[in-house]
Length: 279
Image 1 (tube, rainbow, N blue to C red):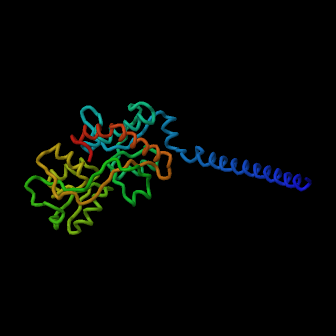
Image 2: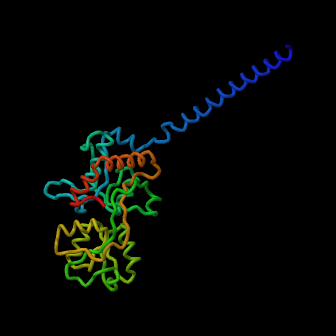
Image 3: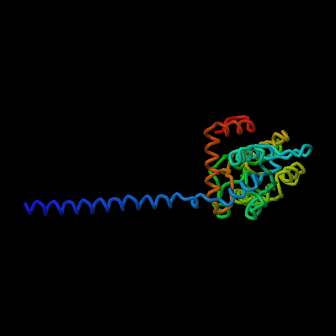
């Protein structure tokens, strides 16, 4: 009998000890989980600033037909990128009109973002490894590729035909760098923006203008005396750029893009400007 009581006592003590250990083990992960999902993980200086001023400040192009083009008569800026920017303002602030559009060029957009003059760049900006060192990029929101714009009847049919020719590009663009690599024997003449570049081409200052095909298609719509040649000789995916290191803003933009795609709104905006469904 004494042996049974001793055995029972040992069993009771062991059970209590195990329960105590289990409680401790259960509580510990809960504490860790709370810490790992805290606000710091998604904090965003940019989002805080947007909400405080109740307005999104977007850097957009003013000179790029189909993407961001300012009407000199009305002063209104319209295009695919403009509609994407307005949709982002609606997502963040509940109203697409709570937005300020600031003009950027390929040369000025990153400095303006760094200085805090704009909250995001939505301006035909190609995602590259080099630029990833300077900004945070969203997922791809538009797929483009570089091509050549020439006057109808030109003897230029591809990049191989550019030897001894002058190619026009825009300062700070990936297109200027790409054409130097693809056509090392061509002279490259750079201008501040696409409007100046297209004007220079029409004035005979160059033999071709090179940039993303979507931008060039907008120029063809403006002047059907010009056409695209050479096919696509690069891959130019566009991303929305936000300040380097602001992961909260990047995450929010990616969530917005997914929602825009899933809802069918992206397809609607795309078709409005390019007259076809996105590929």
